[in-house]
Length: 447
Image 1: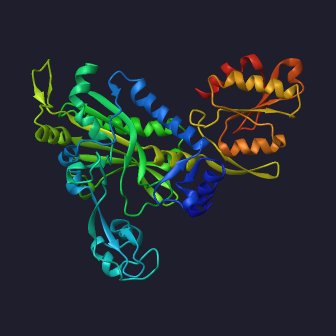
Image 2: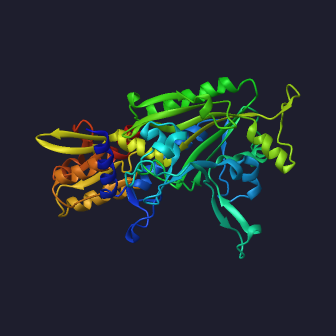
Image 3: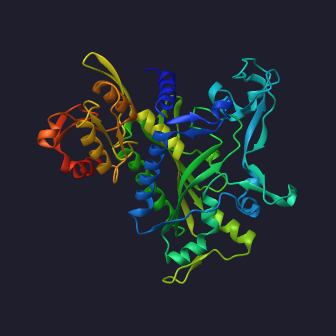
């Protein structure tokens, strides 16, 4: 199917099936903000759970933190965000709408410096009516305390990593970690984007999963290679098709001021190959800056070599929302089954919002009673769903669109043999499984 068509279908399905709603929709929405419905929040939580398990839980060399969304403004002064965290912005003189100049240059295949003269407004279509690009700071400003004056100005964090850097020494000491080791965090971040676009790909409020892995200078390139491989493999292990992923190295002019080198894990979105996750070698820039600004010694002392140094940092950084969009797109399939078209989300079972649906063949007892007993038994350990409304075929289709890997049908034979019919979402194969064995069966299939 055509790529724009796929994106429209995903947006429609996400709304219809309770994954994602426009923020403040009853008031006409609010550009750049999205709300997650019952199945969207389950999918988000599963993505975060798998990332945390991979990055922290199953490793001895990584610990986690959860730092404040609002920090002392001096943090953002030291990191350079107040001075240089900007995007180039242009206005259309005709319709007065604003856009990111670099996005227009990329989309319209013209040099950035020629956007004003040759660029076309995406909203009203006029050419040559755009202003010269000017820097626009992306920080969300707020005030702390009862008085809104310059002394009370603070900012919502635009990234989660600075909270890790300012806590580096405290975490190192309390967790008793030696270099190389990492500190991970999952949390909200906020950027006042000039022009949010492509659904949840670029929003003003989003969630990040970031790891700052501290290494000895000179060993940074080895660890950069290591994390490039690890992060790419994570997506593959959770079902993203290999042909939809690629690693792209940043060219020198693309590198952030703090980066020695950087790679993107890119996904083939309907709007082109775009960054899914960034993996950067941040050098010792951040610890150096915070040490200078705070007056604190943030160097690491190596007890073996007796050296004292600022560690280099390898940073894999992934947005939860962007990852969720990639998993949604990659899971989406349309196919014909027995002359009928079905839409199915082929999520990896670990990510599926619902692991199993319990479906009594008919509403009436005793099937309903047996089905509800199974539901109550399974919901202690699994995210499950009970559905007795409509034909069994229609209920199957609803679960297919939600990505539920298994449907458990309670029929009249279940009263005799104490078994249910388990339908596999992907193969459509059916097998009889003992009610007593269902928890172990699901656990084995999902893990």
